[in-house]
Amino acid sequence: MTIKKLPPQLANQIAAGEVVERPASVVKELVENALDAGASKVEIDIERGGHKRILIRDNGKGIGKEQLTLALSRHATSKISNIDDLEAIMSLGFRGEALASISSVSRLTMTSKPAGQNEAWSAIAEGLAMDVDIKPAAHPDGTSVDVVDLFFNTPARRKFLRAEKTEFNHIETLIKRIALSRPDVSFILKHNQKVVRKYRAHSAELGLVEQKSKRISEVISSNFIDSASVFTSQYDQVNIAVWIKSPELCGSVNPAQYSFVNGRMMRDKLIQHAIRQSYGQLLHPEQLPEYVIFIELPANEVDVNVHPAKHEVRFHHARLLHDLIVKTIKDALAVFQIPTQVANQD
Ligand code: ADP
Ligand code: MG
Image (cartoon, rainbow, N blue to C red; front, side):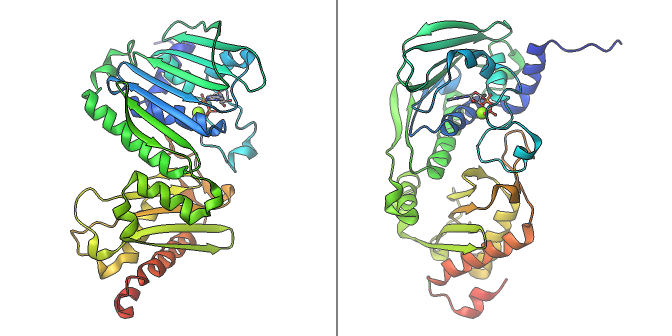
């Protein structure tokens, strides 16, 4: 065997395997890009579970003609420029890989008009064809990314696509999570031309608890808000806001469990453990906790560069944070007038 350098497009497809598992992963990357671009409105149009088409429109800051091709190439990002930036990431993206990966496994058109410019341009990339075509287009301020025929050139991947309904369910779950993290942004999710979810933006002037409560009520249910206790805490530069359901009302199926760290949705063991511990004996083993928790901490206190899809993070002061979460949730649970001995038990 001789060692050969892989052609860039093949390298992209291999990398795509990590980032683009299914239609929902495409939606995640594109909506995160829209939010990083400062959009206050994001529209997600899905056809046939995303198998056929994923179209994301935003009213963010846009990309100029001269940067469109670059945006589609691998390791190209406007979000970090040196290793120090990696220590304190404020944006959702930073790897500069999503657009390159997605365009290597689909037919992708990105159309954009930066505010204040007169012209909109489209960049068109089709799977293995390396060249990006640039054409004039019509578009309002902001960006649209249109992803058609996902995995058309990677049959092995395509085989793993599930039924349209299943893939769309993944997308809907994802949009609910993202919508929870950004009550200040409006989201519209359509499937086969029908509006499935519509969230209007809530102003920050309402105050954090009110603003987030409104969105939680829309995304999860007003019932959840009515049966939950909310508590916020601050320690040093760590802010926690938690909505936690009354233990008496927690069931054993489909629990609402949402955690966010610096606006990023997480499936984090530390947080899950802290939550279970806070409930202590208040829950029977078959009951599942229901909660929404937002943790904000300085960007350099957490490492998000652990997992390509960024589902996991590493906290630099994990123990401290764990204890802080437990304390906050116990304070929240105290509202349900639980005898103190029980509430204090670990
Ligand atoms: P990353 O998000 O990690 O930087 P991407 O491949 O997702 O990498 O995007 C590459 C670059 O393209 C981004 O850094 C950004 O500058 C630009 N970009 C992508 N999507 C948008 C968008 N919706 N609006 C404005 N700029 C965008
Ligand atoms: Mg990105």
